[in-house]
Length: 264
Length: 293
Image (cartoon, rainbow over all chains, first blue to last red; front, side, top):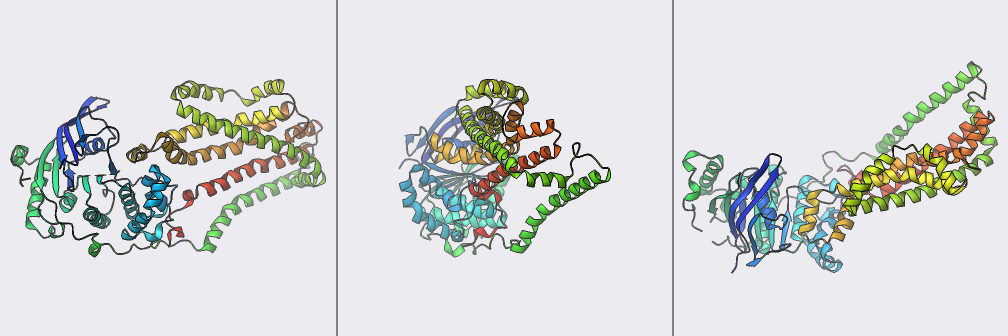
């Protein structure tokens, strides 16, 4: 089976006042069908740029993007979500979540309405279909944004720190909801985050990305089922290891050259 | 590698408890309290106006100021009542000029703002000139417009339109340009066409800016028509002011001013009403109960 999404030898520079600087250098990354991949890195490590390239929002300076084994030109069939909910303030919640189908056609929008109702119910938003975004709390808005992403009808989800702006409790709830739909729908998810805990809670595989320039600096496969992670001692061990990597502990500096901690 | 098994379905066992009502922490204002707030907003300026009018009346009476210098408010009111058919006739003329000018100015401003947005070279060429043109006082144009379009209705309508169109053009252009780039990206990942991007994102996003422009236009709307009437006309409140002033019937001048104010305020009220109808979300907050089931 071909990889769901594959980027190869990806490089991207940005021009700023002081000149050009490398955001991504030689990044090669394959996302397998059905996996929940977390791209973990410090702020400014180019992980959002990586996601934007995958979404077709930015063209790389060098490298290739393949979706299902085919070179991706134009708009790859992915759904994309950010930390900002980006709900349109002039639309009710209902009209917001159906934006994706509506942009395809009126017909698709009508077909998706029952599914939208279902999702509203499972995300505990059923009473708020006619509310405007300004009337909703941050957690409710982000849940709505997630429903909107799901209703785009895409198998591949690219999420850019989707829960970064939420309080810890709301974030945990949304993470559980996301895991639920990932399992239920058999989605492939790439989630970018700087939160080690979040990555450990959600991912089936974690890829570390270094900053300036962004390179893949480590990879960990998480074999534990999601509901056992809170108690598994190995999870804590891995957390320490990843944190040490991110903080640049000297004894781990050369870690990228080692074998991955878990065999892929 | 193999992701963990997926037999659990939507993990309902761990789903969050139903959310509390978003407004539960600070409930909505009771209706009576809200009305009191609304009422107080009007009460203070009205009270101040009453004090000013009373002082004016007292000063005129106390210092025996002649009515051809400064008529007392009571005399102005009396004039308005006695000569109401005259005031009504001239108000109707000015109102129709302002109305037609507003329609022309708004349509022109919308069209120009949109065209400048769609053709960047035109914007770059035209926008600076437009700004410079606003430095030319409208008063300077008025005599020319009368020469070109005659003493009648048309020159006043064009005068009013010229004043109204500029804030509209600027606010439309600004509103269309300021669309959130992240929202544009979101639309792009959803496969939106350029037309959908304009119609479903940029245009609705520009509406609040457009309404700011409309409000500004409404406030200035009467200026153009009145200047046009000053320069040369046979009817209208501007004409009435000039002829009354020349004959030292100052109470009538004040009467004309009193008739002019409601035109601008009425237009402003219309814009505000339209804004509330078209952009209901602008006035909602988490305190409003609209979110309930």
